[in-house]
Image 1 (cartoon, rainbow, N blue to C red):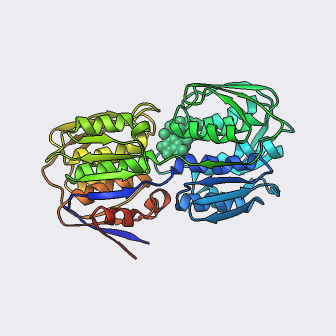
Image 2: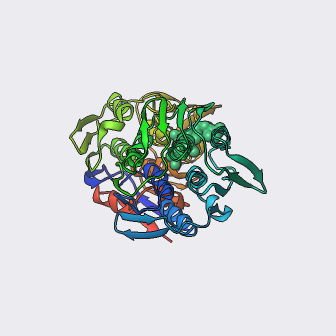
Image 3: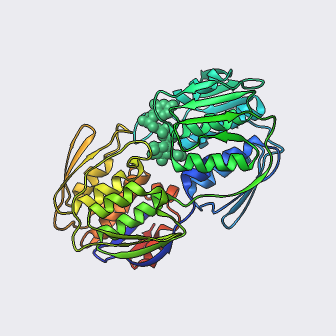
Length: 416
Ligand code: UD1
């Protein structure tokens, strides 16, 4: 298993480009299932999760063409509306094929994602919504089996804000008969990007980006070309890496537009941030000031940035209180940060992080994607060598991590 060897203590300096957003690309690739015409996506990040999704679509009969960051999907020959366990278990976002498959094929068999390191993460809301649209759903032998000749528009209300749940139902509603209203919808920018792509494919959607999305079903969708938005979590992660190391960086191909609260918190921590149209600059202070955060659905602080902020608080001046309200078990990086010398106490869904003057390198274990990012940031800030084990988590969500960090002057090396 690959590991990442980090020689810490160097401030990050320089410039690197941000990739397309994983969490926008994944639902968007499944949207291509909704039409028999080719759909082309640009700015598709080169990530293991994207590779998994493309393999999943290919085995359903979708013709996949990939050249650099451009992917064309042709689902004219879609004939296997099945997502097997072997694929779904490595990537929960596979559940995103469910809505589009039932809507276009009238049938889908999708493995339940099962448990996951950061919490139970059920898909009951996806099932509830499709059932309300008339699908007959049976959960048998670990598979969701959905059937419906044609979905009907419906008034849907999700019990909690769910990002992929909103996306699944919005995609399904595009081909349903009549109008659908999704209340308590997720407002994440990735939901808006998906809606824009669907509209380019001929869907009739309004309200994406608010908590009420209205969809008027159409008979069919057509092909389109869509550029995937920049990855706001990757952007935030590099900003944190620069902040933790006392660095000064410029990130291109991205925007602060979707990062308001993250940028505000970094400024509260003492960083100077300048935003350009398609770039962000950050200059870190000598020592960061601790900043407390509470994760919640967009536009509040993203749970996907929580581990990175735990890392920067570990070296800041003062004590930060970190509350995780989305996932019940998302503090696994804390024990690993403690191995590097961090002072962290956990009480339920709250972490108390008392900044220490200096972290020291050690061997740590990555437990999930964003936890790994937190460990890399801490390793970059720490004195000496940090070895991050199980970096396959990072490969799921960070394109060319070592190359980008090296471009910013970090000493990092992948070891087998
Ligand atoms: C998406 C993101 C992930 C991010 C998360 C929260 C993608 C591919 N992944 O995950 O990076 O961390 O949003 O911002 O976009 N829930 C239920 N029943 C459901 C659905 C969700 O109980 O049917 C619960 C979950 O367990 C969780 C909360 O709702 O506690 C939010 O989950 P959700 O927004 O669905 O997360 P994902 O869409 O899986």
